[in-house]
Image 1: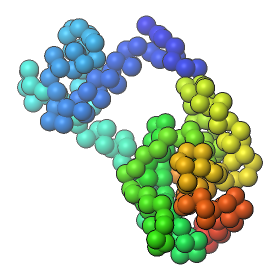
Image 2: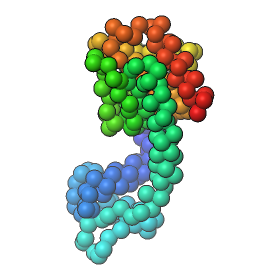
Image 3: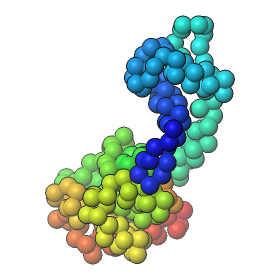
Image 4: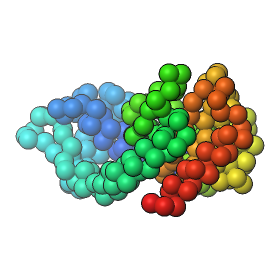
Length: 237
C-alpha cells in the first residue's frame, strides 16, 4: 500500500519497518515484539514479519525466541562516515569561531541541520557583560531563524521539502530566505527572539556559523560587516 506524504510517496511497509527500527532504538536495552507492535499500531503477525526481515538483513537481532529485539552495529556503520565528517568539521571550525568572537566581540556558534531544526554543536561565548549565551545541544527551528534561513538558502532540496511540509510558516519566511540566497548570509533582526539579532553564513548545505548578540549592538549594517568577517575567516581556513 502506498500513501502520499507531502509532495512524495510513502510505501507503507517501508514506513512501518522504520517505525519498528525507531521503536527498537528507543527501547535502549531492546524492545519486545508486543511492545513494538502496540507502539506502531500493528498486529503481532505483521510486526513479526517485518522484524524478521530486518533481522535477516542484519539490522536487528534477538538473543533467543521471545527475547527483546536490539539494534546491531550495521546501522552505526551506515552513519559513522557522516558522524566522523561532522566531528572533523567541528574541530576545524573551533579556531574560526574563536577568531570571529575575538574580532566581533559577539557569541559565535556552529550548527548542523537536524530534521526541521538546527542543532548547535560548538559555541564561543562573548566576553561582554550583556551577551547572548548559546550552548551546544540547543535546538531551534529552521524556519524563522538566521541559521535556519542560511541553511535553507544553501540546500534547495531541504527548502523544497520544508516549503511543502510547513507551507504557512514557509510563506511567512520565504522573502527572508530569498534574501539569504541572494546575499550569501541570513539576518534575524529580532524576528525570532525579542532583543536578539543574528547573522548566519552557511558552510556547504548542512552546517552554518551564526553570530548573535543584543540587537542594541547589532544593527543591520553591523551584521552585514560581521558576515564579511565570517566569510574572511572561512576563506583563510
